[in-house]
Length: 556
Image (tube, rainbow, N blue to C red):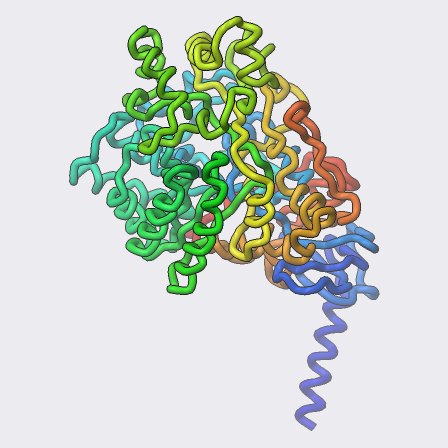
């Protein structure tokens, strides 16, 4: 009799769930829940911002009904490396990434939007070549909260940048912090963690981050560890000293007892392509030893950064302003040109790694008079200006008063596919979310800004069959959320936030190219963020339900 009563209670509960009203029901879809298993047919009921039911909802109704017959229904994708802190101020719709299915963008590769001291705040306010905005925050948490108030379509999260912490306390000089300065740096990390940061992020090939020694980084990560924070790094080398850089990251994670994550895993430069196998073996050995190590990547063979990545960090001591002054000195300039053509072992020379000037693509300038060169290679521009590629690079930096955005073709397609199949690799665009309109068209871009995630689903999973769709979805969602220690996202599960995608796997496609980067991906049909529909039938609804997603140790 007791068993019958229990069964009756369960039946009534199921009937109640099946007949109550929902805000949205997504019907008849093939559900890939993010765990990597086979898809299953089910309906999903959404109430407010939460997934309320997964199963048969044939007897239920909703204000908004979506027929997903023949479509994949998945968790929203997570961008492990987004450069959208400023682009979202300009356009909170996050058009480029929403149309790829990205519902959470993660910031903080070395630099973060706080904590700012008075000088940093003034510099940020004054240095706005394209997008104009008021710097009305001081700390990282204040910036993130201000974005919620402005209104954004995607969720956002951030690591606190070790470069930002270092600049806040000791500026851009090449020196170690004093014990008192290091203590203050750790205090700033703790403050950021309490505000909701995910951990500490670094970008160690770029000055002034390059100047930080391993022990300094361990101490910052130890400050983040009690809050569940991780360490995520553009490592000190992705080329000639790739293996040593991986060893440093593993050491930092082990000593600080935190999750360690490699930003945009790669072996840069043809002479280093063969090192990827040893990197994979080393990471997997560390994982077997109980050290929590993972990586993320973008799905292209070219990286994008500044032309100044072709110059020794020692000549950038004190910041870009000092470098700009030094470039005017004929003696230093001659040394710079020689350094650009040198296979350096003590710093990362991306120009040399690319192999030739025709593998360096110019992307972004501050001065309108130079924008005519965007989309051309450095070799082409040197020919147009009747000079050497090295002189052209230096002259352009002087004339533009910027580091100049460029793409370096550095990686092999074979390694891209090999990395993509690894079970511990997730994905990050290393780009801002953009739109082919307005001020965004005043700069060129890397195609990864528009196609990094659809490329995983369309090109690599469907067309190249590198990984099955269920594994691709798992890496784009659940794996990323797990590594970030983020709860209630990255998986289609009752009680989780309703970040949900509906798309046709047969039609998802990236269109952005190096020659024509400003092109949306297609095939994403419906996108929900926190239960609100931001993409409907492939068009943006202008809804802005995005939230600041805080780390595990945040003060609630």
